[in-house]
Length: 308
Length: 231
Ligand SMILES: Nc1ncnc2c1ncn2[C@@H]1O[C@H](COP(=O)(O)OP(=O)(O)O)[C@@H](O)[C@H]1O
Ligand SMILES: [Mg+2]
Figure 1 (spheres, rainbow over the protein chains, first blue to last red):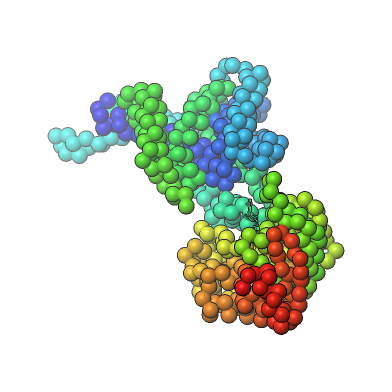
Figure 2: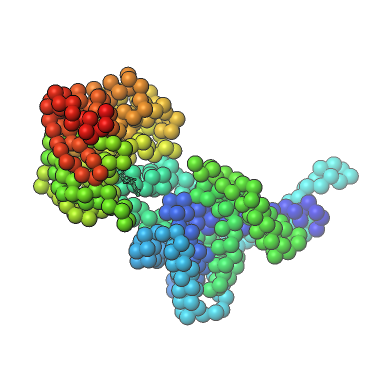
């Protein structure tokens, strides 16, 4: 393949990484923004989404689309409920103290991981995509007879991969509507802006926290469900999303949702492109290096506001 | 009637309120007067349930507020205008008022009534709270509180740093609320700001309330003022 089509393909792969990453990282971002909790177990919620998707698809049986749709609905809900429980039983009891929440979520990470190993096992298991037609993509060429469309061999994608991008965009739009256009969003933002004043206006902040933690976990789980037809479910698959989400949230500016989405695009696209042309490891190294530079030269992140 | 009885309040290990008692009656202004650091703000936060009591109780009519979770106190009819306003800065004027309206489930009628008290806010409904002038921010802090339809309104230094015209406006609103039978607890450091509208003055000193006087008496007896405020 020539450079042009090759780059196009890499960007497409990058867009899929970016789409899933945006969902996962926005979950981490709202949990940090509203609760000031650094959730080290966030990647495990991603993994749970994928693993639960396998369970659900297996139990439901029937055509792949049915199992997948059930998984898309129930895996995030179950993961969210588990997260709310963890918040209520653990984080609330330690009063969201920053240092202790980090330790507590590290504990949660291992509990979820080992419980998955004991029940789901060490194998990687696939979930079939609801639909998966290959589509060849066109490229253009300036030939002897001028402009022409060609169909280079190997330049293509699948309908499922495109659907992942569309789904991620729709979920992020729904989240935006929730945060900016609904009462519950107003309550969440009030809690974020001034916890004490929120309480003084009858907002039950502990319930809001449990809900936000569930929402954050649910978004990670959605990322996991969308990923599992492309990459199999495995009990250790939460590591990469955790690292990349942290990178994205720091670059975007802690707690800034818009910044997180933009940074997810940036990191996801460059991850896709560098992975295709060089190696996935180099992509991670460069992303981590980029974070180091952001922390040195713009500690509030690209879109964060400087703490006053 | 808001009844604050023998409360003791501490920040972690340091106790700052030592057995303080005051009473606020409907349709009256109770002024908590004291120097910086005397414990006035701490007292208001304790009434709101934002700080736990070590001893004593706070009750409104028959309801013992100090036995409730903090977020249940506003629903019982206590509203708080904190020192420094503490608006939800990234939200619009309308959204700040919405947060207040949600407390009591009040609707359009309440909102209209509050906007009538503060017409300048009506012109700025979509403006972000942190872009308002100081006086407008204070209006919004009061508007947000009044949207909860309170029986008791706690005001912590509401005229701090405001222009005379703004001070007059806030005073008018307080007088109007008095006539509507709201109990008002007004925290101030400067006595001249309150003598005209206060019914009762409670002196706060080192976390105690050694003396409560009718405002009328106070006007004749300047020696009390000198003792507590050093004026
Ligand atoms: N968050 C806090 N932690 C520890 N001590 C505090 C805190 N806030 C206030 N204090 C102390 O409590 C005392 C009373 O403060 P405050 O109620 O704010 O006084 P006032 O409102 O009368 O000026 C002061 O000595 C102050 O230093
Ligand atoms: Mg004060």
